[in-house]
Structures are given as structure tokens and as C-alpha cells.
Amino acid sequence: MSNFSNHNFKGEKALVRVDFNVPLDENFHITDDNRMTATIPTIKKILNDGGSAILMSHFGRPKDGPTDKYSLKHLVKHLNELLGADTKVFFANDCIGEQAYLTASMLRSGEVLLLENLRFYKEEEKGDEAFAEKLSKLGDVYVNDAFGTAHRAHASTAVIAKYFEADKKMFGLLMESEVKSAEKVLHESEKPFCAIIGGAKVSDKILIIENLLERATDIIIGGGMAYTFLKARGGKIGNSLCEDDRLETALEILEKAKQKNVSIHLPEDSVIADKFAADANTEICSSDAIPDGWMGLDIGPKAVGVFSEVINKSKTILWNGPMGVFEMEKFQNGTKTIALAVAESTSNGAFSLVGGGDSVAAVNKFDLADKVSYVSTGGGAMLEYFEGKVLPGIAAIKG
Image: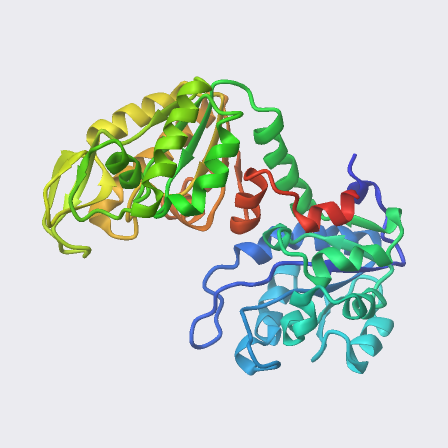
């Protein structure tokens, strides 16, 4: 049993770091509540035990202190709906002010208090100790359930833990499952282990690829970043996305993979377009023979076939980054087919972890989120974890 599941919160005020940084439309309606729903089981466990929950989160990137646009008050109604009408949800117009302390002190068993945006204080992102200590006085127990911010050494994610005894600080259920899933892939992966790495830039993914060379048997590279590798090998890539200052790096990665007996799979063919637009003219073309004036915006049918075959024989799958510009219908087939292959392999017994904003958006778009083993809520945090970095939010609890 985990520390959290073992702990009885009866009579305790649990100070819970959540990640409620959700997108809102111009009328302050939430357009994607995944981050909120993901932490509801943690909050409910605290309330069901007979405890109360004080929730703190950042929201957006306010530059000049408190502004209505970045107020967490816009989330109170929906939070109440998620927890159930019989749960009282209060809101404090500050996170360390008099109202916050007073409301927290009066909170009864089964009640919830949502504090105002932590980032209204510059001290939050600076990891200020005095600010962290003030926050810590609001609760008896500290619960970190915000994996999406675990890579930030902020006051509420890393520094605050030092003000709680070892048995009074713990991960919430979401954080536990994120860490467990990531560790399963990184440290307990069953072979063959296939990492699918996509997205626009090689520079964003160098560290993760290098770390995975020590663990994976196969690395599939798609998306815009593939064309830097293809050009490095001498291919003609037309107007496709390319980081010319990373050509040498791409060659080094290919050489390291060869030495470590890791198979790197680049797309044999591409869906090319004469412009970056939804109404572009398209053709299928060999990925290393793209004519001038044309650009690769998705992987082609041959690549789809090869990649799917690799995925289907894998026992562990990590997917970070799309295969093309899947937001446009003409260029979504590669990403969609790879998502289907990951889902099929999962149904055949593979463990699959999908992480990173665009990959998560893709599995959600194609209704496959429940067909993979785990969908991570932390884009940047997951990326840094797989780069082999120590995440401050995890280290603060684990010691």
C-alpha cells in the first residue's frame, strides 16, 4: 500500500498541490478539464476519511500580480460539480492572506477550500522559503498531486515539503500513478521496448533520445524532427522543417544507436505538401527525395506499415510526440494509425505510456485514451523524467 492510501485523514486538513492550469475560453468556460478530473480521486479519499482539503494551484502566467483573467475563482463552480453538490467548496481570494488562514482554520470535515492563484506571488516561481513556510501553515498534511509541475523547483511543489514531517508529506493518487508508470517504462521495461518520438524539433528531444538509447530496442522518429535526421544522412528534404545546426547531433545519435544495437526507424516515405495549409496540394514521396518547394507534413503509407509492425511486436511502448501535423485532416493519418497500433499492441499485452501534450491530444482526439495503459498528465515533467533528470517535486517527497 502507498503512504497516501494507508494514511487516514480523519480530522486533518490536507494541503493539496493540484494542477488546475486548465484552458478557458473567452467566457471563462473550461475547454478541457482533464487535469481537474485526474485529481478528484485524491480529494475524495481525503474527504471520505473525514478530513478536509485545501487546494492550491498555479494558473496561467500572470505577469503583474492579481488579475481577473488568471483567477482560480473561475474554476469553483466546475470543481463543485466534479466533487458533487453535497460537497461544500469555498474560495479564498488569496493563498497566504488573512482570509485564506481564517477560512482554512474554520474548514470542517468533508469541506474543500480552493486558494487563489499561487503565481500571483513572484515568490512561488522563485522557490522562496518564507512563502513556502506561510503556505505550509494552512494544513496538517502536505499532498503533492501535481505531476505536471514536478519538474519545477517552486515554493509549492518542492520547497514546502521541508516544513512537514516524513509521515505528513506524500504523493496523491495521481502523482503516485504517474511516477509508477514512468518508472515501469524507464526501469522495469520488458523487451522489445519501442520509443516513438515525434514533434517538430530534434533540439527538444536530444536528451530523451540519448537516455532511451540505454534502454530501448527500437526508436521510431517521426514528425518534423525526422527531416533533420534524413538531411543529415544526405537526403533531399525540400522545404521540410530542419534544424541545420543539429545535423551533426543527428549523425552522432544514429552512430550511438548503431554501437548500442538500437534500431532507429525513420519514415521511408512522407505525405508532402506544396504549402503549410489545410487546403495544400499533397503527394506521397520518398522522404529523402522531396522536391524543392514541397515539405513533409506526415509520414507516408510505407512508414506507417513499418512503424506499425515494430509497435506490434513490442512489449513496452513509450510515445511522445505526433507523426505529423495531425491538427489538419490531410496530415493526420500517420499519427492516427500509430495511435491505433499502440492501442492494438496494448490489447495484446504490451504496456504503453503516452505523454506530452500533442500525443495526449492525439489519443483523446481519436478516442483511444482508454485503449492504452497510461496517459500522462505532465508534458514537460514527463519529458524531463525520461531525460534522466531528478524532478524537484518528486525528490522533495522521496528525499
